[in-house]
Image (cartoon, rainbow, N blue to C red):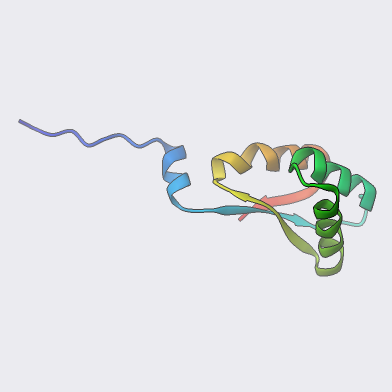
Length: 90
């Protein structure tokens, strides 16, 4: 009798790779208020956290704005991109 190997979905493999982060990059065309409002709406930041992330992004050129599994982060990253922000999952 042959044992079959369990099938693992691509999403499960990506989740096993560990915690990822969405990195927000600085740009020259989005306002602080827009970035802060977007982080509150999309990343579910409280106002203070969103403001701090916006300032870190401005000063250092980038900031981790949300962490989680790839599967959790992909729709959040896509919404940030749809709103004109520059972001990437790393």
